[in-house]
Image (cartoon, rainbow, N blue to C red; front, side, top):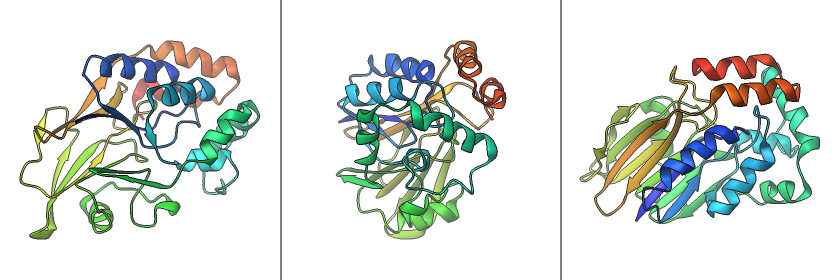
Length: 246
């Protein structure tokens, strides 16, 4: 099975279309999206439509929860809160219905999908080091787990015979083999708002037959989405950061 994994989209339809165009040539059997379809970006409904058309297996992200009023935004920064407030009245009833139905965790062997961490998933913790990865791996029941939230890609590998030894492959653009490992935790980064100083959209690709995994990057029209952000009246910083990958 070939799995295409979409990281945080954040209303960035330009980036999402670029990623989907790349994946359409990869004979993908199933698509996964790790939450945060909305927030920050100017086209939340367009992104929801694309995710639905792909038939993605999707979990709820913290921005998805915030726009529904499920999650308190008091810990969000001012720009994130402004984007949530902008997004809420622009969602269609069918968008709200779709987002509200998303679970925090989807377990669909051979993979699991969660936004932040399998350790207290409703609290949206970050996996940014082997320490957090270990907490999540302890709750992982499937061979593979896909997540996002930090917007920084990395792959964490573990053998059950050595449960406290975590192998880390950061920014894994080269194809890696996970043969010989029992648990793979894959942070696929972000489609619509990378934060690893690489502004290109990130996505994941896994082949369960060959036991290979990689995170790929694709350039997209950043200036086009920057224009849409500014014309929508969203905070200018949300446009500026896209070109920097921050």
